[in-house]
Amino acid sequence: MILNELVTHFAKSPYGWPELEIVLLIARLFVGGKIHLLVDSAKVKPKEAIDPLTKSAQWKNVKISKRKILEKLELEKARNLGKELFSSIGPDTPGFSIKRKNGILY
Image (cartoon, rainbow, N blue to C red; front, side):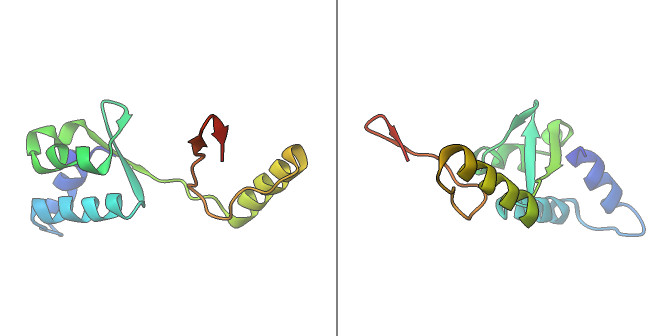
């Protein structure tokens, strides 16, 4: 969904919400990790989101995408497959990152 369309929808009757309040709610969902924001098909990082969210002229370029949250069963299947293939279990938390130190992946 495009941010401008969302703001327009909730700003008119029967809701009548102030535009910046709507954008604030979107920003909270974004910072909370519930949604992704895309500008020109590229994911936006929180520090980069200030201009697109505060300048109404840019709202037409901001696409809102719901973050896919893995079900527990899907995550467990992936962990079991990883254990089967690599003889080790990945971390329990989704969104983990692999770190490289001295050429070795952790």
